[in-house]
Structure formats: C-alpha cells, structure tokens
Image 1 (cartoon, rainbow, N blue to C red):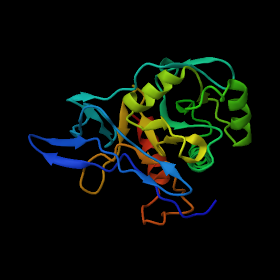
Image 2: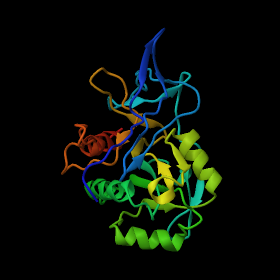
Image 3: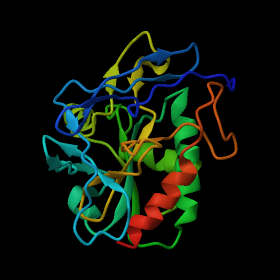
Image 4: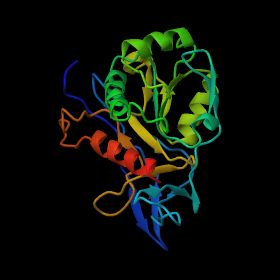
Length: 252
C-alpha cells in the first residue's frame, strides 16, 4: 500500500464563542484512491467545557454534550472467544475504542498495528483494555475475529474483538461515539468508517487532552504511526500522546 493517504478526523471542529465554548460536530470528508476514513456526527452539538471533575488527578478533558459529560452507552456483544462482553466488563479500566472490520483493505491494518503498539506499552496492566467493534458482524464471526487477533499480535487479555447485531454496532458508532460508520459500495472494502480512537476512563467517560488553543481534541488519530511521525499532509501522529494519556488516566 502506498504511503500517500488522505484522512478525515472528527477532531476538526468549528468553535463558537457564545456563553462558553461549543463544538459543532462537523465532518471533513476526504477520500483517496487508497484509504477511506470519514467521521461524521448527525446529532446535537457537543459542549466542550473544559472544567475538570473534582479530585481529578490529570488534566484531561471530559467531553460534554448539552452540559453533561459524555459516557459510553451500554453495550453487550460477543468477543473472539465466544464470550459475552459488555461495558460493565470495562468498569474500573482505562480503555481505547475503535471500529474496524477484518477484511478492510486500507486503514484498518494501520489502525490495528498502532493498537498493538499501544497494547505493548501496557502488557501487564490489568486495568487497561481495548474494545474493537467489527462493522461487518455478518462475516466477522468469533472464529474469524480470533484468527485475526492471533495473526495481528493482539495478546492483551483485555483486548476484545466484538461482533453482534449490526444495527446496534452502527448505533454505537454513529450515535454513541459520533464515529462515522456506513456501508458504501463505492468505498474500498465496501464500507466507510472513522480512523480515530476514543479514550475512556475508569468510570466510562470519554476523555481527551487539549489542543494548542486549549480545546479538547476529542479523539486520537489511529492511522499515523509513531515511526511515520507525520502524514503527507503534515498532521503529526497521536499514538504517543494517547499512550501518555492512558498512563494519566490509570493514575486517577
């Protein structure tokens, strides 16, 4: 695969100063002849008030919607071992979320190579985990996911590759996380999905660091590797900062 890629990021936002700082979910669609990654929100505005939770040990932001801190919705799916895994299994853990599919010919291999690097930073951390949701559950059975996990070096016991009801997975992606996911026959692999990772704290809240203007970046780019440092458009990799922020949340 050529190194030249065009990506989209949910982290691109319009800031409106009116009784506070507000994030208007907006998607910048970029599609190349190799990689497709589109992030989109079709719901209410997200309030990015940077106030911290009382007693917080880190400087990471809580993402807010209409004044309420955004929490991971309830979910329950089947993992690569045929076991039921829900959001309750991640309680007390800091974890990273992605949406992918095993037959993805473009961004998924890059995303999961980066996820392995994150996993390897916390190999013995029992309070760390990863949730990888398949957007093609009709073909990504537990058996297929298990083979994929083994082939790609997923060894952490808290890394679950999840499959289940297609509508529930798409609802979780598009409404639960605002990480765009959709079937698109014109896209490579037949689907479009976000190339971003979401970071979740021990209490189930979505967290992120701030950008140079002090606003939350919301999500972390999962496509550019630490070795690459930047993509062809000059965007810097965010895997290093994600590792740093996971470590911060583990101390909370």
